[in-house]
Length: 161
Image 1 (cartoon, rainbow, N blue to C red):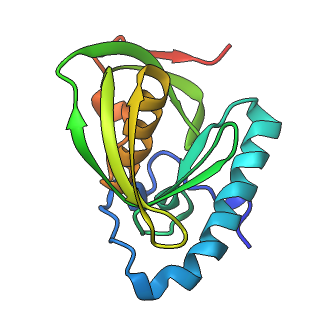
Image 2 (image 1 turned 135 degrees about the horizontal axis):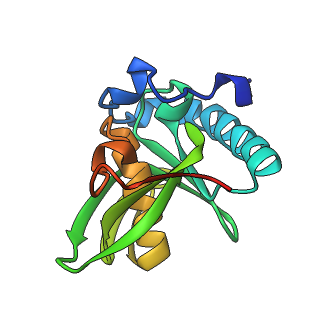
């Protein structure tokens, strides 16, 4: 079982790698990965008072899985954006891999995402603003992109108060 100390921190080379798709035959493994993602996210929430979602690569699980838990748990397996709005908005982004740093980035205001759930059922979800920003951040982790790499400029960083 993975714990907070297993969370990869800024600078770890695995955070910059592209994750592999989950194969349907790997579905039995997903439950364990989701348990680990949930456990670590709860520990982050307890320690830093933030955390709405986490991507598998943040724990060194190099698979295309995102776990979100705001009102209820949602597992995104092999997510794909099918629409990204042209309209962007500015947001101070944070990340569990560097929990005391905020990074100002531009994100798409709206998106549509398709994904499989833990039962390999396909879903589509249209999102705006906060959810859109959140899923873009987590999706970037699947592609080895950190919000530090999307900073608007060299003044787009600040410490969490």
